[in-house]
Length: 122
Length: 234
Image (cartoon, rainbow over all chains, first blue to last red; front, side, top):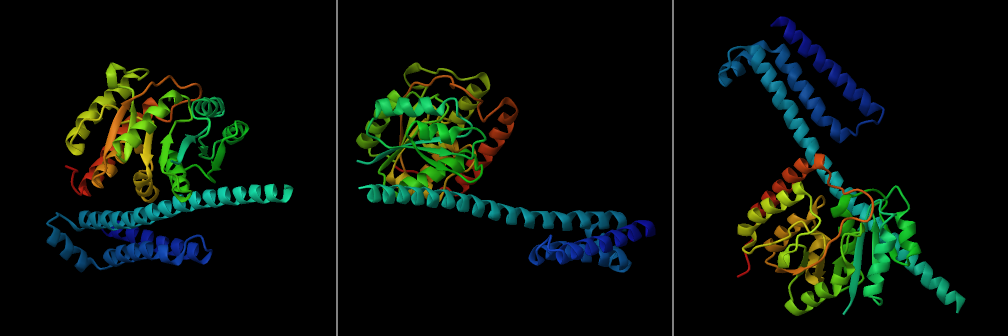
């Protein structure tokens, strides 16, 4: 049990360090780092606060704290993944609309260019 | 009457020139727009050589995004009708007048060129044929009327549908979902018999491996659209 909690603690600290480092290097935007930092902090808190973990395990009706911790870790990362699915979907929609708009504007520009050339040639 | 022929194309350099020429032979006065979905080959160049107008997309959007780009441009340019003809040469351009005539006569929002009306049912592989039978049965209660060829891309739309599809159009495998989108808005469609041929060149975007993904994707898309169902036209 203690070993698992220690591993989770180290993992959480590594995740926090990695995310902060990525933000500092501008590899991740601040607004998208919040989900990961929150997830890592929740895991860190649970791995260090055994009383809370045991209370949650009892409330969930699962046999032991390790199982409760793994369940919570899974749930936390599912929420993070869901949030990023929302963001990716919105970005994809914007990207498609933008690509279509660029193509249409280029089309109009080319048409205008041809008309200008035709008028200049008259 | 302002009609535009819309040809979505992705890596169709071997076929698209012939398609443009065939369409022009049937409808010499009608403008032809090839939407090039960022092909890796010379599709856009071949289309320009054939004297079609070309809308080149800056990156690959997939069939739905490609068709919608054409619909958006057509709507902005004020076209009353748009008929989509695939760039692979499967659609026989001689059927364009029939689709246009149905759009004008019926006053419906969409006309589907069907390969299964009048007993015809050419050039369909086993998997696709099985999928069509499945989707026919699934769509019958949703649409409130039978649709014989729900996966046909040979479709004509009027300006009302053009306005709708410019704003909202399924982005992958759009044909079946587009029918549900139309139904949700209480728009009408009719089918007219059309001839279809084997593709002239290139490969279909729907391979055997993708068929399962296609089924799941379309089912999910239809399900989501039915959840937004706003009623059926009486």
